[in-house]
Length: 142
Image (cartoon, rainbow, N blue to C red; front, side):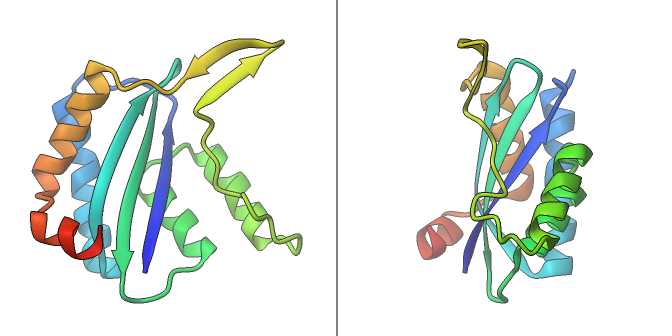
């Protein structure tokens, strides 16, 4: 089964290489712990930081709680993930509990937007480099 992890970072790293390696190291650990495979990684810069979208494959069904744990373990904003945790635990069955806004507005004006900047491209490159996304995985599960 295919899933998407959505990570929110409210800072911009000084080193794309170091940040990419940290994310890749965490992904490698989670791969061995949860038995997931990384299919793709997309990174976007926002006004305050970064949004990462990580496509994964798991032969075991993951529930919404598992997704929250994975996102938190990868370093996504802890406040966002705690709100996500409350949403998935509630009896209301939120359909869209795991949301990152591509554009944010305040008083009708755009205050932030996801952009594919040089920083985003560089981080994406390093994450992919360090986790070694093979064409085999992309072809088989993409």
